[in-house]
Image (cartoon, rainbow, N blue to C red; front, side, top):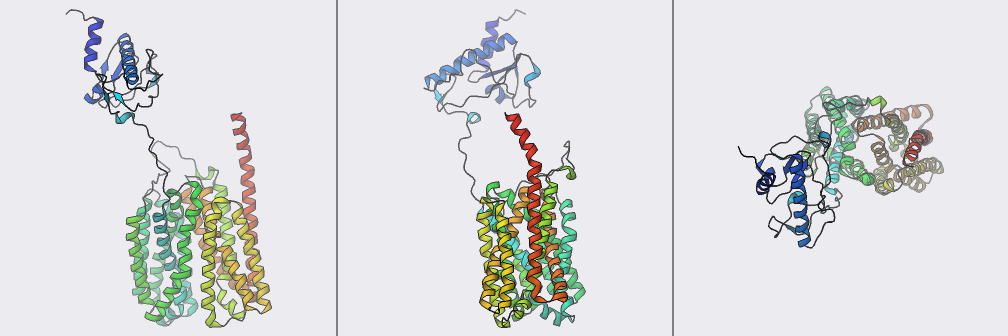
Length: 536
C-alpha cells in the first residue's frame, strides 16, 4: 500500500475533528467535541499531535481575537489540555507519558467562534460558575425542627401536670405515678447511645420521622392502657423514641446552617423545648382537667402525627456521611482529639442541669413556703416560662458573637439570681422573689442552647452523632439527678436551703467549664505554633 504523507494524515484528522479542539497527552490525543461526541479515541504520533495542537491553538486564538476577546494564553506554543472521551472513561494520568502537560482551561469568551470563524454560543462545558447565590437562612426547616421538639418534650413532661388524675384513675399512689417521668428519663439515658450507634448509617430525616411516629404510637397506647403496668410499657416505648429523636435532632441544625450561624439555629430549635414548658404542658394540663388524661394523651398523639407530616414536607434532608466506608481507615474514637472536650462539656451539662433542677423541680412547694398563695402560683410559673423564652432569644444572638464568654456571663447571672432568691424569700416580700426568679429564668433560659452549640462546635465530624447521644444522656441524668438531690436536701435541711445547694452545684459546673476551656487552649497552643513556623 502506498505510504500516506504527513500532510495527508493531518488533513484527514483535520476533517475528522473540524470544529473541535484536539487535546494531547504525549502520543495520544483526543478531540474535545466531535471525537468525544462519537465516543471514540483518536491516536496520532507525537509529531502529529504537536502539529495538530499548534494548529488548534492558532485557530482558537484567531477566533477569540475576531470576537474582540483575545486570550494572551492562546499562542503557537499552546499546551494542550488532557481529556478523556465519554466513550472511554479511563483517566489518563499526567505521569503516563513524558510529554504530557496538564493545564486548567482558560475562562470562556462571551462570544465564541465555530470552525468557520462565525460567533456561536459558548459550550456549556466551559461556562464558569459565576452565578453563585448566597445560601438563605433555613427558617422553615429550623422552625419545623422546633415544632418536632415541642411535641416530643411535651410528651415527656405531660404527666407532671396530670399525676393526680392519673393516680385516681389507675388506683396507684401519687409518688408511684410520678415515677412515670423517671422511667421515661431513665429509658432515654440507657437507650440513646446504643440506638445512635445502631442507626448511624440511616438517613437523618428518616430517623426523625420514625422517632415521631413511635412517640405518637406511645401516646395513643398510654391513652388506651387499662393498667399501670401497660402504661409503664407505653412510657418505655416513648422513652426509646425520645432518645433516638434527640440523638438525631441535637446535631441536625449543624447540617442546615453555616458554622457562624450555629448559635442562632440552635436557639431556634431549642425554642421548641421552651415552648413545651410555657405552652405545651400547661395547655395539656388544662385539657386533662377538662376532658380527662386519656383523651389528652390521644390528642397529643394526633398532634405528633401532624408534625410528622410537616417534617416530610418542610424539613430538608441533610447529607449524612457514614464515618466508615469500604477502603477507609477510621481513627478510633478514643484517639480523636475532640473526645476529651466532648466529655468535659458533658460534665458541665450534668452539673449545671443538676443544680438547676435541684430547685426548679420543687419550685411550687418552695413558692408556697415563700408565702405565695396557691392560686397565684400558676401565673408566677407562666411568667417564669416567659422569662426563659426571653433568655433563649438573647442566647441566639449572644452565642454566635460571644461563643466563650456568653456562657460564663449567663452562669454568673444564674448564681447571682439564686443568691437573690434566698435573700428575697427570707425578707418576706413576694415582689422581690418574683424579680429574682425572673432574672434567674432569663439567665438560665439560654444556657441549654449555649451548651448544645458548644458541643456541636467541639465535636469532630466523626464523633458528632456520638456527641449528640452523650449530650442527650447528660441532660436527662441532670434532670433526674436534680430531682433526687433536691429531695435529699428537703429531707435533710428543708425547702429554704434549696437555692444555696443549687447555687453551689451550678458554680461547680462553671469552674469545670473554665478548666475544660483552659486545657483545650493549652492543647491547641503547640499545634498553632507549629502551623505558624511552617507558614513562616
